[in-house]
Image (cartoon, rainbow, N blue to C red; front, side, top):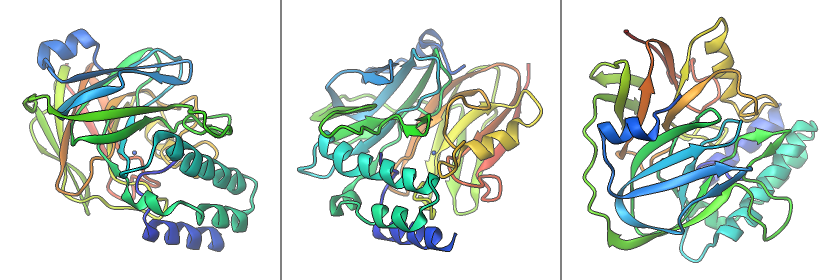
Length: 317
């Protein structure tokens, strides 16, 4: 299971770290606010993704219908030329799982060696958003720009210490779905946003607009795309602040390097968001249906609160 963009800098940083020891709207609500014409309907069921093999290029809405009883998301990664989804799983996903297993066993030297075996082609991966974290039996929707090429869609939430996208059997895909984005452009216009957030070196901020009860179409401007030592980047996921400890639990959950990090069951209720959009200067959209109350907007990074990657906002009734 891979994490965002395993460039040489990210691998070096994690090796140094080891040695020292990133309900949502119903489809009906979303259609009323924005009617996508280039739509990829994706289903999570039985720890697998189901969806079409192809989609037209350009602005694309990905709607994740999570029919499992556990949390999922759908990260969209464009593969380098000549790299297949099976290679992605065998040469990256399985390696990452073995490295994580060594970390959890306390063998940081072995983990460093395993992570150091990432294939050279991994530096050519680019990430293009996708629906953010969503609770079971709910829907998450995001809109992003997809150039033509070969992609994978993956979920690397953990169950029992195993990433959902990891496969211990060579040649067999787990929660990784191949997708071909065709040269033909879908000609879908961008959504009109109600609210605009910005991500940069100072963190996450609300740039324009106000959240409201009901359907919100949110634009996220990725002014930067910081790679942290854990090799994750900047994104936005939304959760309910509805009980004592919600914020602290969400912060802890967002660090995959710990046993509890990104592991089911989630300690808070996630209602959608958007995964990484690459490169810096890109933007994407996500749609969420919000009830009155308090919500957290958080990035999938360790210590998100200390990095400015956590906002707490109220939605009036």
